[in-house]
Image 1 (cartoon, rainbow, N blue to C red):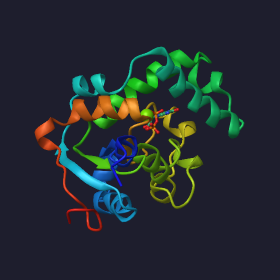
Image 2 (cartoon, rainbow, N blue to C red):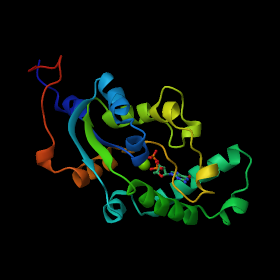
Image 3 (cartoon, rainbow, N blue to C red):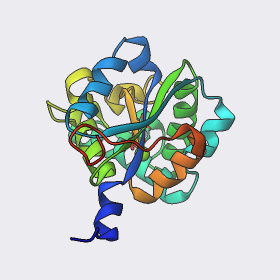
Length: 201
Ligand code: GDP
Ligand code: MG
């Protein structure tokens, strides 16, 4: 039976993850990596880096869609807890809130080293997002990384003028994954090898 190239591409999908400063500082790097390894994802690149704000400015999108998404997560949490967005943030403009959150995010992720890695496997991007859980730890299910190890919510983070501490970054979709991998890793830092059970092991 010949190899179906389309299927091979799905099985070899790659995605970027990094353990954020809170995960590194809380000593959760091993715990977090283990969760990806045990479901069968393959680590094909890994390193510790201390990202600068300039670098992160290239990593996090600047477009209106991304900023409004950040703002709408804030609104979702404020609505759930019956809190007034206007009273806490001084505005209900999602774009403006998104801009502020993005600024806090650059401060947070540049505050200490992170551990970045590229994972490969069947539909790796969506599998990784499932393991990571909801962006806002208060909404993340138990069993997910964010649900099990974090408790943060925009209702407090925004009042304290800081980003949500949610332990990990994971690419949001396949297109984002491709962009992020080429920003964080050079081709020489990524490896192809068989995992146990794969042909060639
Ligand atoms: P992710 O892909 O699940 O990490 O979420 P996003 O790409 O939407 O947001 C990027 C990061 O911004 C999140 O991981 C959080 O650290 C932070 N963040 C997102 N939404 C909010 C928010 O409403 N308030 C605050 N303070 N931080 C947020
Ligand atoms: Mg994202």
